[in-house]
Image (cartoon, rainbow, N blue to C red; front, side, top):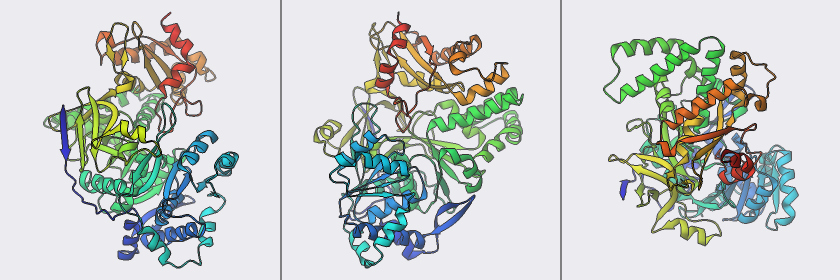
Length: 595
């Protein structure tokens, strides 16, 4: 058993809550810019005083609507400026925010609102409102459905305009560190989502220690980030809070508008899941190949990786420095410009990034700080820092957190970030938390310096018929790194050998068809039978197999004619594959691999 602890660098009082920072900043420095809001193609500044006034106005409206301290209020929306206003307004009214993904089905909305006993819900679009209203008959606690696109923020504010200002001060000071701030429902790769009780203390202490104590170099004067991941996910939510706590200017975007928004917003750091970085790399590679510059890009990529690796082993030699400087002009500068030109750091979480990709981006000039955590740990449990970076690991514990590796290899977490428990589920709470240690279900290892490496999921270990234990995650990560592969699932539990289901990335297929002289109208189903494409995927499988022993290697694979998507029920909103659903839906394809 190995354990590594990092003491808290920022102490937080028991009375502290999430509303302290915005209102304190408004009083101390009312003209400071705290957010930027998109207006047409431009970004308008929102000062501390303006933000606090907007939050207070909505909070008064919630009080007028009958929302009491401790009541739950749903928030169903994409990432947008109004989400942050509503988050803080609900907290200022003393209530609990229940985030819901914008892509949730009516059945999922019904479960979350019903299980949480939500008294009201803010729903973004007319369709979202309709989805809520379609299940409202089974939700006896639900008294209010406010449509964001229908002007809910202004309407709720107007409803509370006559209330005295001290109502908000009284309400927000009624909450302390041990009170629940938000019920974040797990994505649910198996079974019903569970509501994680994340307290004010969890969010405030984790945000302050992560930003001020772990990655202080990121949160310097003038720092700004553009949130585009779903704020219903705990990762983006923690960054939202960290921006407000740390004085980082916050903007909001989404995937469809991301590239033009990056160009105009010009953030200094980003956060994303590994798939975003994979797509940036693969897109640049495909674009270069389509322009007849594939060999130049390949050399530039190899140079970036070699340059980054050299930084850990004494620094680059003169020849490597010259090559790196040349490719910085030809390739790397254009990549940096694609994300606004000012990004120095990016924080990655949610899945494994891959060592080569981490070195590539550092060689390009963007340091990706890979971290690790779960909903139950208020997002981060460990993270790499600019001054303590080991690419290929997820870093050391953040200040205030202890990490232990159990005898069976499971990662255990204890500290300021661990949830209070699961809502209305005492049995699950007792199963997950023992003596303050949260059982993550992940397998990992700590090195002598306290850097954590995640090696797989405890429940996803495959045991072949020969008794060989195989962790599918490393193989799946290597396969997804190939530009033509979108998703994959390694199977073989109880079977004679390991196999894989592979899906194709439709965005990457267009340039590939053009380079290989294939008809533009050729479908995914036709392409998966094409000998040249089959050879490419076989090469990717062979490359992935280099990372494991012969007994763990993929012996057979099948290329599917469809991708795994959230709409089909194969992916969670945080882009994790639902193993049990995929195995059920593609049972015939899996069986054929072993017939």
